[in-house]
Length: 139
Image 1 (cartoon, rainbow, N blue to C red):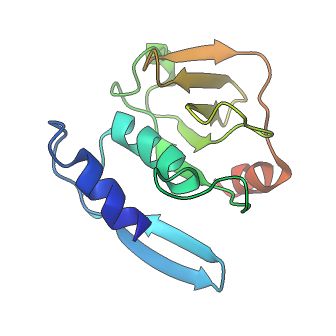
Image 2: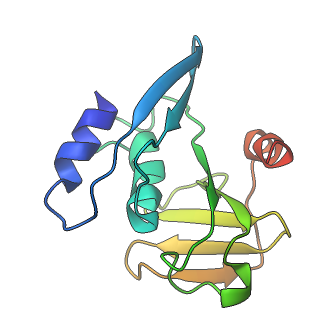
């Protein structure tokens, strides 16, 4: 339901077509795959949307969302030297803003993307949860 709501929300925003295939890995663990790639900005929105869907209460539940990616020029604001590196998109630990997604490269550089700016900006505090840190070990 959350995935289909996300697709409906952004279907007329001019992004290239993409596809999402949810795969249940455990009772409360899902992996999304993108047979037809998703635009980097839309992927950023998706990471946030899964945790904070527009019509669900965010205070009464706990969810960890992170996404693995390979950096491209579509990640606006990143230095060209990072293109091609693997990274993880995630929500910052103790998030109370609900409109910022973080990105951490394998080399340990962290960026934040505020939806008010829509540009990746380098930050010094990674605000990395233990769950996301475990995911970083797997890429």
